[in-house]
Length: 318
Image (tube, rainbow, N blue to C red):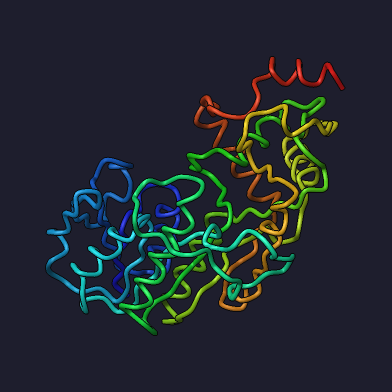
């Protein structure tokens, strides 16, 4: 199988390329060539720029499938489809759970959950526009490719090479041991998907030539924030005491923390994706791999969460 990956040297794309190569697929990368230039030295690269609309490098050749990892606004998708036309078989678009409405959704929601209204009049990516822009991209892919369109909607993707460092914060913090400040409530549900499980799903959907929309959510078993922190501690061989603190005492968008009104977004059903072949890596395995990767890279600054000093000050009041 010949697969074109739009993007493919960052986090999710890197996992997809690795899994595709594992299956023996012939992969071509498209991007600016700035991220991870040392990766995949034997994989052909087509240099272009989605922001400027430069798809000249794709004007020739054919592929059995394209995986669109880097389409964030409708123009990206529209221009890519215009450049590729009928020279690809299946178009698989990596979307987001953010496409869904935020109210009136209970635990166990599936891929038929109502989406937020698509947005096309901006390219500014914010908390409010990201999901609606992705919804517009989904619609454009489905309109152009019909039964040859596949939509994958990941939850929070984690694993080695995660530049957002959401799980990494808790892995690193639990490894230090002691009293751990948890903004919010210990029973908050949390869904994270190992990047390698997401990649396996993507490649399997291409191999099976399967249309439709699929949730990429994990881990293998439902978990809570307190259970996640304790799993991180067990893997690291440390002892922790999880101490809930007021969520308003920390900056917004704290790693993996969700307001109670959003808890159902962390309880979506993975049934359709599991039936299509998505693996379910145990959380402890993902945590161990993140811990090893983070230590190997020298535990570089994360840029979010609480510093030890900030956490100690917060805990002093509990």
